[in-house]
Image 1 (tube, rainbow, N blue to C red):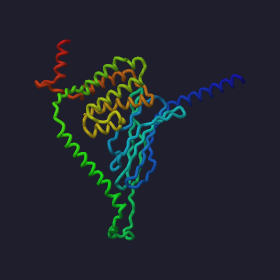
Image 2 (image 1 turned 180 degrees about the horizontal axis):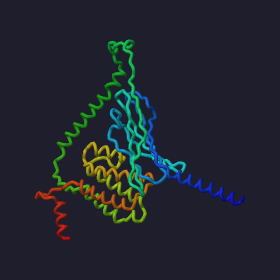
Image 3 (image 1 turned 60 degrees about the horizontal axis):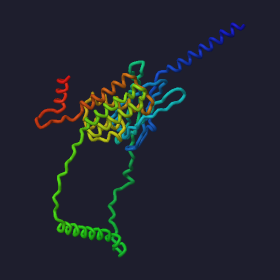
Length: 336
């Protein structure tokens, strides 16, 4: 009897273990929904994408420019959020949409790219969505076009005249006095010889960026386990370089906004654009979602940062018509 009880207990424990392991190995699931499926022209609707995970997986959402499908525009690309509940992680991404053409629109399944340390990248898809945009119906039989009613003409009172024209009169008097004083000072003041102002030339954006990259590399932060500070500082260096090099507000913009600006201005080629977005999205995950890339990726992103600065720097031509950077590299090679 005791042997039978032990066998039954062993079978129950084994079954529970199998169920628990199978629960932990559930594949990631992506879902999409709209807060409403029926809107008027110009109204806003929120598209929400949820990706459910059971392990540390890097989630890459698609990068849109201005539309998610024909005639459905993206007004805002909101930052993603991480939610943890019941031993699983939900990565949530939201977009604010609108449309200025009436009709029914089909939103195709959205592709989500997943990357893990153990396996290659895989792609999962959300469910399709439907959005109906309607116009405001106007009954032309009840609303007739009427003539514009002219404004009533009433004489101004003294108080109304003062309140209406006194500020302008005071401004004219003040401007006249200032003009008189300025002319008087010009006539009274003799011209003094001024010394030429020597302007200190500003450093080029790539010079600053390369110096900061060298300083960061010398700190050996990721080698000592400081992953989040390493990616935060590296991301700031690249964003500062973008701001100084292309005069775009990269430090105050989100990653999706930087992608939109660089694509709109067409300042980067496709390969450089892709690598830049890959690094910035990975840095966001490390900073905000506690994602930890592989050690090889730390070195890869560091090398890509150097390459990005060198490939996009401004080439300076000296008076003799030669490239300073090319001449310097040639001298270094000869020295080596």
